[in-house]
Length: 299
Ligand SMILES: *Cc1c(COP(=O)(O)O)cnc(C)c1O
Image (tube, rainbow, N blue to C red; front, side, top):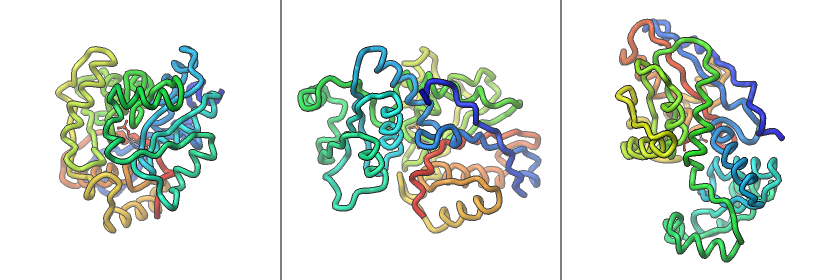
């Protein structure tokens, strides 16, 4: 099955940006977006061990949560199909008149969509609400919103294994923090700085969330070398500005690496601004993890 072997196509691509040259740093992008056409980027790593666990534990259905534009919903629908599992997506908000491409794809992949009000959606971790879902849909393996749990961290801890050069910094966009937790868990050298770029406003809370995921995964705590850059949210989750879109288009044209506006575009913008501010010492090697999500590119 497609997701059961390790991905082989995760190249490390150098970005010869003039700013990198000017400040004497090497800038590399780890292309996990190339892992799988539909379960791309970090989602492959986050879902693999969860779906294997679902099969091993005898479930025939997985149930998860997300918004109408969620890359996690999209990837779970595709991955569940690969594993021969039924999938139920609990979607935040009333059913829209016009479905997003994400919802259309998920349904075509066989996911059963269940729309709940925003108020009900907030109950998504409450035992009584989950009990109600179990009565309605039967027993299902639960994957939390965004897919972040200890098994997701086990998967994302494999991402750094594709980096075959020495490096000083590793950067990654953050939504729920499961990907960052895996990166932190797998970076052994305390001198390597791990930098998270939250895609949402006031992303400082992610520090606690990532610490919690790390603790659940292997009982360790966040090292000093972990930092958060909370200024690159561009107004909040899924919000954009003309400046961000223009940046993405220029970057894509100059370096041939496709980006999207929710996560990777914001991170790349942030890294280049930090380079320009002299944040990275001369001689640094920066690895930016391209977490995929290109299905959500909206321009
Ligand atoms: C889902 C997603 C993220 C966020 O990952 P978390 O593990 O929730 O922090 C980052 N980038 C892309 C492209 C995504 O689709």
